[in-house]
Length: 168
Image (cartoon, rainbow, N blue to C red; front, side, top):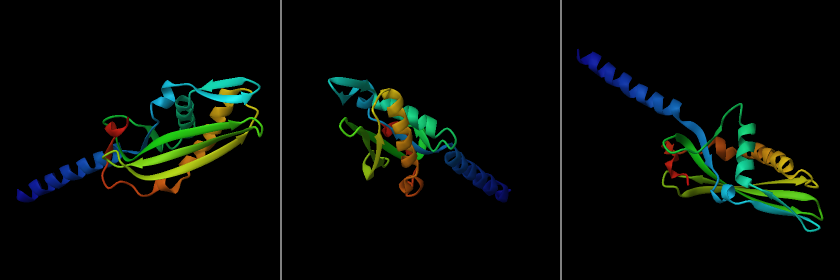
């Protein structure tokens, strides 16, 4: 009788362990609200400006680039993951050189929402910015490809699963 109780307890603990592991997403990400709420401006010269939402376009690029492996998932309260990252895009356009550049700051957060490591990923696109949203989306897709290849995404996991409630 005692052996059966021990086995049942071990089975219950193992199933809880498996549930936590299998329900956890690899990496949750979030982009600060200001990148959704405000339109950003690109001055393309000759008094022309293009307006765009970096948060919306970067999120769309992530969704397109991660359809297959789903390594990145938008951060949600109650969702657990091995890592949570904050993505902060900083873009500029040089109209003389026709270069659109983004420096993507990637902050790896712990369960207390403190930055434990940062990484910067840079991507440049030579363009005339004719159809700006399409150009920016293609640019961001290439940037996300570089993000997915970052070694730190695949290694240095948190010891504990992190709840998405820390995302702002």
